[in-house]
Image (cartoon, rainbow, N blue to C red):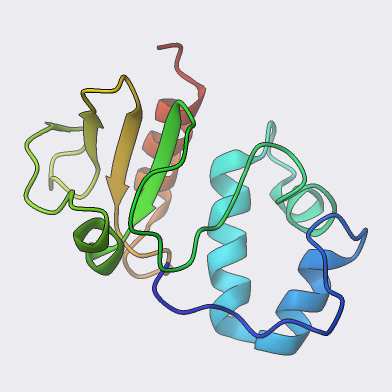
Length: 140
């Protein structure tokens, strides 16, 4: 993500109310981002409860201004600014949708990367959410 959210002093992602506080402080833009993340990461259809109580407390991270991938087996890179900063823009990969908005890349180091649109409802419709969720849950 290119722009960080505002955080309360002492805010920790492990706080029980971390996500609701982040949304309250940052408004609709970050609510949309976190909702899309929850829809992709939730283990079932109850993404609202997952967003408000579990998101960022499992194996998810939001990296702001990252210039390298961290040591993890899967990465969801959202938007052109992030893919450029990570040196992934223009990388050849496998399109997972007809429009080529989701691009699967396997790095030389064995990391699986999904390049996706910026997490905004207009750019990330339900079909792309479902395909992203399928990719995340698929075995290597």
